[in-house]
Length: 381
View 1 (tube, helix red, strand yellow):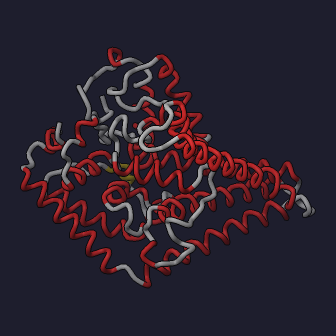
View 2: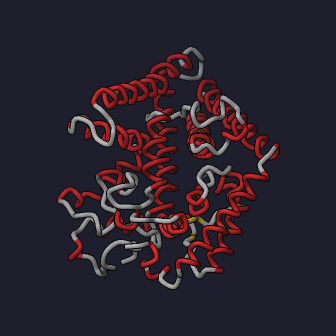
View 3: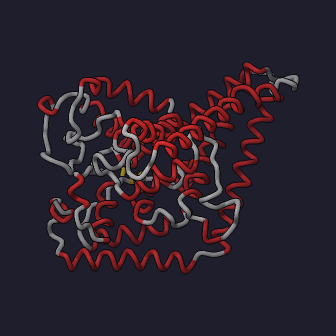
């Protein structure tokens, strides 16, 4: 089944799809040609502000004796972690700032403040997710290996706990991200090597994953708490629990943004057949139909890592995040020109419909009130 067989694309001819690709390519070229000092200042200032915010959170936790200081420090630290993971880490590791040739702010060198390793995430996310966006069985973000997010996933008894699993993933999202690659390596080990990955490489990567996780646990719950306990206003316990609260704030927020980007009404899922002889224009179409935006102002967009522009990010994953608002105006015009859907909505609406879809799909298909047939499926049935 070709992407053009999807009803909302059926009116497009092959020539239309090729012309669409040319227009979207032109947007990329325009942004690439205009990157410069203004963009560099943006990322340098963002990194400086994030680090200052993290230091402020640590100081508040170390110096404050009252409960209000604990909450203020934990919240400040949580926001700092969100910015580091979303607007900085995620985007740097996409290669959005590689053009600056700064060895620190580069996709191959950045290591983020999260349980999973950057190198492993670049494979599960940049390759598996962005190349095979929303393709069931190919994109590891479709259900993260245990959630049911489309009726075209075979229902299994454990899916009755869909809501429970999604709640656990919400609270421990950094561990879910780390598990993605770990799960791939365990399956490779069980099969004696798969997809070019031999057992030795799988074991090495698994050790790297365990080492990074151990380092995160030691940093957040032993080393930093022990250091701050030397101050008169903090203890090992107060700092460790504040770090836990900050990590929970970060996990809940980031996964909420992820859910809004690919799970709400209008974000289609696809069968693997869509990849057969897929052209560049058809790939662009799949990114548009498989993604959903959040209606956001500048502050909310920043706190989402500019993933409120999920459609634009999927069309141009390696273009600077500070340009996505500008790109969105052009992409919407292209969608209007070719009569294509441009899925966007308020944060709470997108988040609620994503949870509703996950709740419905905890039951077998025969219990669903509506059925859209085979993939693609919008999730609103």
